Amino acid sequence: MRVFNFSAGPAALPEPVLRRAADEMLDWQGSGMGVMEMSHRGKEFTAIAAKAEADFRALLQIPANYQVLFLQGGALAMNALIPMNLLGTKTSADYVNTGEWSKKSIQEARKYCRANVIASAEDRNFTYVPPQSAWTPDPDAAYLHICTNETIGGVEYFWTPDAGDVPLVADMSSHILSRPIDVARYSVIYGGAQKNIGPAGLTFVIVRDDLLERALPITPSVFHWKEQAAAGSMLNTPPTYGIYIAGLVFEWLLAQGGLAAIERRNIAKATLLYDCLDGSGFYASPVDPACRSRMNIPFFLHDAGLDAAFLAGARENGLVQLKGHRVVGGMRASIYNAMPIEGVQALVDYMKEFERMYG
Ligand SMILES: *Cc1c(COP(=O)(O)O)cnc(C)c1O
Image (cartoon, rainbow, N blue to C red; front, side):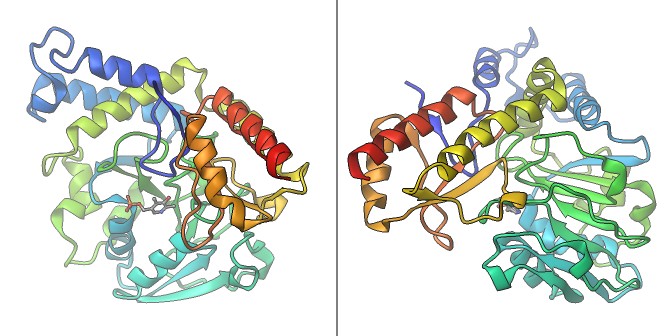
């Protein structure tokens, strides 16, 4: 029996995608081969990769002057590769610190440049996004980096900063494809696939063409955006199976009605859970209501002594991976695109029942 899996990542995938991958495991569409066994330069895989990119572009309406790269290394590798690819002749970059993933980006960037923290939510334990009026950006920075959904703290941007002429770079690992975004407002969007796209091992980069001229000479070729763009992300062997599964997820999203339809579902799911938290004196959300993530929802039981019983009971009810990240504690429900509303309803029903028993 499949459970409702609230893992923050690697995370649940849509069941129809897994079934189709299973059907095609030994023989992809009459080729006599599974996708894992194909040459990345053969006509079968070339078609799979081209379709995946075209569908990703269609879903996000990515303008033609942006490259889409499918690389490896995850979002953490990008923390080094962003300064390497974007510093050019500059020596500093701006960062907004909204939580754990921002902090990691800042620490890594400091190996390569001066990383100025131009705003931080640390004063309120990373439970909000500092408004842009409180930022102190440097108009001469190489770029301005933000993390638009803090997976651990559960804080999400619902607005797009105006960075002026400074390239805006966004880590969207954990909410990409959860709603429409205006790609043209960003210079670079990147993330790991294992939250809302597909398997771990695949990393996407969406980068505007004019930014491809700024890489430091030391940038490794397989991570050099211009070289990878020229090679169609096939300078080295790309994560072929990850690209295939991502492509199936993109097809599934298009069949669901695209990102506007998915956003409506995600709002309904998140509202269900936040209403349960807010309507109870037993549970609480730590996050400022204006910045509450629709994808990652940390919450606390007022009596932390009941945490273990809550998790054990949840597991018995087929609700798994609800333990909060160690730096935040409590619980966290990650409800990405693949989580059906039935899963959130089952969680809310369980929470109400648990409150009746222990409240
Ligand atoms: C998961 C995550 C990362 C790290 O991704 P890796 O693939 O482990 O490198 C970075 N940023 C955000 C926002 C994440 O959710």
